[in-house]
Figure 1 (cartoon, rainbow, N blue to C red):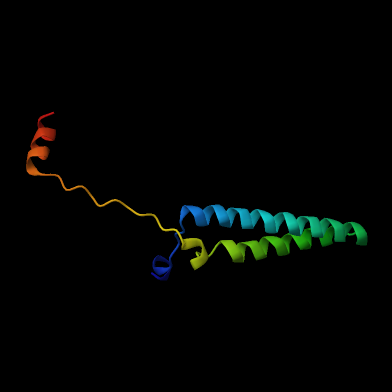
Figure 2 (tube, rainbow, N blue to C red; figure 1 turned 30 degrees about the vertical axis):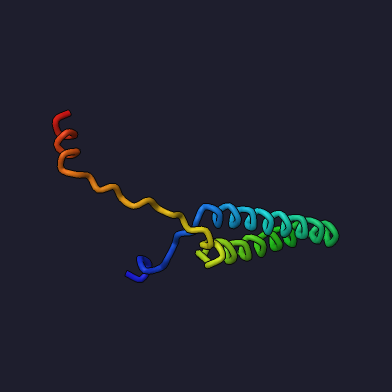
Length: 92
């Protein structure tokens, strides 16, 4: 299936930066939309500006861009258990 081949993971630092960017874009678009809607006396302009902000932030944050993967986790090597350790675990 095609969806299984699409990468979907980002690192923890990337998640934090993506969340901050998402919030900044939403807040800025809401402020701009509020001011523009207030000046034009149309609430629909406020909602349209917010919708544009949500769309832009979704395009910037949702795909796992390489900028969100700059700090990958360093996993520890798996611990290989010896047969004597397995026997002692089985006795308990």
